[in-house]
Every structure is written in structure tokens, then in C-alpha cells.
Length: 257
Image 1 (cartoon, rainbow, N blue to C red):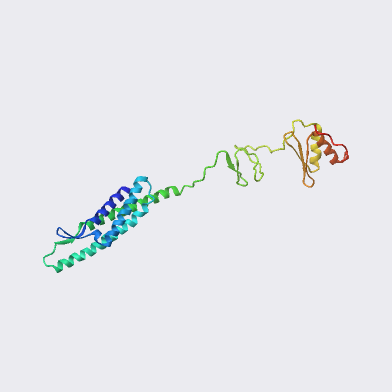
Image 2: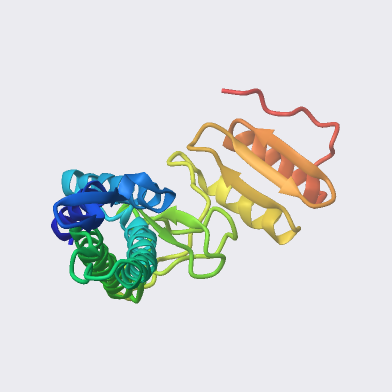
């Protein structure tokens, strides 16, 4: 359609330069001799620029300009054809034997042809753009999600695909493939002794939450008593006996290893 628009703009431009009214071989008036011709000439230049842009970039961003250009060209051509035709008949009636001597110039017909071609190009561009929008508009395009992340099924936050617990809502997640993952448990020290196991049972039975930080220290928390840290199994056992009432709190606390 851009080629048709370009050819049509050339025809419109040429029509503005050719005679619009002539008497035999004598040119009475051209398109540029009146404001209507100037309007048609500007419209032809705008349409040609839009057609050149579409041809060079293969895009139809300026395609909407073709229809206004065609409308301006058609309006000028039709109105001036009527006006010039009326003037020709008036001259023929005023001058006896002048019939056929005064006529409408070829410029108006060339302008009309170019404007019609511009209208066809504008309609074709509009339909093509709408068809492309309809083709792609029905497809729901979701942003591609990284293969390393996914959405939590509970809170919809983005988390690691291999995460076992959601970092936002704390929900335990199912493994891919439908298998349930084992619950996450606090890490236990590899050097835990039977006394440490007994201390754990004692403290947990009293409402304490006990965690081991990779064998470095014990973290003992209670909702009403706060959090304490112990750096050996002996210290943990001492604290458990104190809390259970089996040892005096003022008794000596084991030294850190």
C-alpha cells in the first residue's frame, strides 16, 4: 500500500502543476493559481512523506495520515471541477461559437485520480493494521517467568523453584512431581550427646524452642522468657536441670569448651 500511496502523491502533486482551466492551447489557470491548489499541493507532500517513511521503515505508524490527505485531495478536486465546469459553461454562453474552445484542464482530473488512489491506500493500510491487532490482541501474553523462580501457591509471592518453605508466608511446599517434602527441622549438632537429647526433651516439654546453629551454639527461646544461647551440651544440660528444678540456679555453670 505504501507504493500505491507514493504513486498517488506524485499524481496529486503533478495535478497541482497542470492546467485546471484552458482555452484551446492557452492556459487560463493552474492549480497553484488559487488557494485550493496550494492545499492540494501540501496534502500531496504530506502523503508522499508518509509513504516514503513506510517504504523505508516497513512500519505503518504514519498510515493514518493517508486518509486525511485523500480527503483533502478529493474535496479540492470535486469542488473545483464543479466550479471550473460552471465557469466554462458561462463563458460558452457569453461568447457565441466558443463551445468546445474553453474546457476543464487535465490537472483537475489528474488530482482526482491521485486522491482516489490515496484513499484506497489509506483504507488498505487501516484494514491491514486492524487485522494485525485482531490477530495478536486475542492472545494473552504473560511475562515469561525465570526458570529459577516460581510462585508460592499460598501467597503468590515469587520464590526459588527449589524452595521447601516459602520465605514470606512460611508454608511448606510440595516437591515437583507430586511428592511431599519432609518438614523442615532445626539443625542438630553432630556432637550431641545423650545428655543433650534429654535436655532437649526437658526444655521442649516446658514450652521452650531449642535450635542448634550448625554445632556452634544452642539457641533456646521461650515466648515469655526471651532467648538464651549456650555453647556446649553441658551448658544446655545445666540450664535444663535448673529450669526443671533439679539444680539450684546459683550452682556453678559449666565452662565453655
